[in-house]
Image (tube, rainbow, N blue to C red; front, side, top):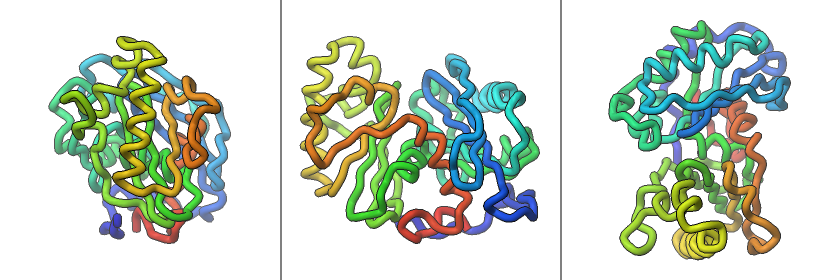
Length: 260
């Protein structure tokens, strides 16, 4: 399970304001789009999401500048949560497969954004954040996001497990989950075949994790209907934003702290 990490330097700017009065800027970084909104102390969205396309072959420096421009029109906020499409450890990027450049490895995203925006920043994998917003905190819950690629997170009784890059694990016919279920695959094979692949993936995940419930989010979750099994459901894309509130709460839904 995710252990309580050491306090982060970017948190030193946190204002002395009661938690329920703090507004959070939530940023969702995707392979094709960047989104942002302001959350109140309960995680409700105070503004509509603003969005721009993700620059192609986006370097870390260009990303920071693009995000600063994106959020400039949004109202005042006290802190920032960032969902990132890759492995993030203590605010440092380990992988960024869908951003088209190797320059991300080792980049301290939290620190760079904190310096640019003048606010404390916490960053986590985007599927982990969506999961924090989606889960009920009961039993084993798996979350996958279907978009440019495939994101995933696993929880047990509300506790976030160590992030696994399921997307890049072999799935079928010598290809990974992302190669079989990402947006490029959907456009290539069509919805009918893509849904069959997804059904097989669900069965595989059930055998692998013995999940009590599987939550499916991401932009391509809209293609799924009532044919899902009873232990599987789709969740709103807004949770990719609203889940950011949990990065600033003392404890996650199942009582394990995400950050100290």
